[in-house]
Length: 451
Image 1: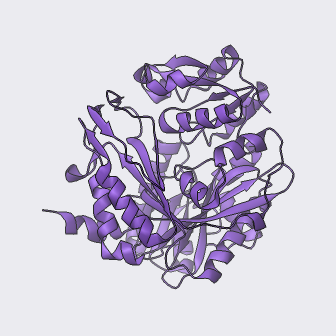
Image 2 (image 1 turned 90 degrees about the horizontal axis):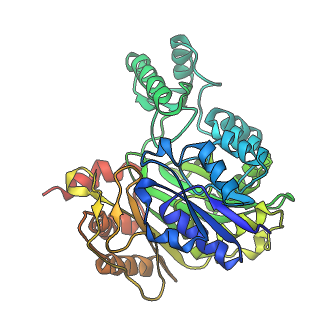
């Protein structure tokens, strides 16, 4: 087992890793930017090292400074968390070349799965259903026209690198295709440094369902069942839950089995999330693999009883998984709401600033993962999430009731948050019935909530 782990991240996930390491008897090194100097969670690490100025490109994304901090802190492993360098195969490789174990997959597996087009080909090889699409990347307008005619309109143009909806466009006919491809390529180049795009059939009103997988270095692969992430705005997840409502058991089983095949096909170890879309006929199709821990991992932890961060660390140290698939029996229902420092009344405009008061909800089945506290200044430089509110109850109806109560208890003043918006979502009949899709928030809910 490792003696000291550096956390190459900040905020909530850094605190989460610190806690897991403490329970494993591992010392920790936290890094921070000038914007995060003085953050309370840094005091819980055994050592905290500044790696640069507020801008992430000058701090959390500086590979040389992160490695220097690991050397200075005498770490023997690096946990990347999520975001920043977490899915950077080059960083992964540099860590290993500098004799730091990277708590994640191998660089080769990360690189293959990080390219959506390559991952799609791997899914096909593993017998995992994929959305009908182009054979490889689009190299010219002629390629795009030929592929789109074969697939059928509307088509979705997707960047082969990155995520978060960047480099993504929909073309409804041949006249709009050329412009959509050009726009997607330009956006992908700016966001990811890679202009490559490919085409897929556009699935109308899909649900977004993903499967949490954990694998060791001895060939053992286990899934922790699925999470439904259909409540989204502009491709950004807002609420996640497990089990996925209204998903037929046969589809659920087939999807989880497909996720395991996908991970085995990639010779992958450590935590991964295999993402799918589900159409209105309950057919599922592979989207991508996230080669890291996810923001919403607590949902899977609550229903499975598995501490994913501890398991990640143990797997990276060469240990075998301490459980098999038959040991993972899902219990009850879990829901997570991402509490962001944003103003829903102003088109979810980020709302950085000082938190004056913060009252955290509690009670049976309520969990809050957060680095924020009264007096904490939410910086404008990073993601706006300040807390994750998670509930776990025997049934979904009970989980919804508990979440509404917990959201009502959560009191944060000094900044605007999305807590009241989440409460409104949970009260909508479509959410209660489990019939939302990935565009429901923008198509129906936001117009409904306008004064």
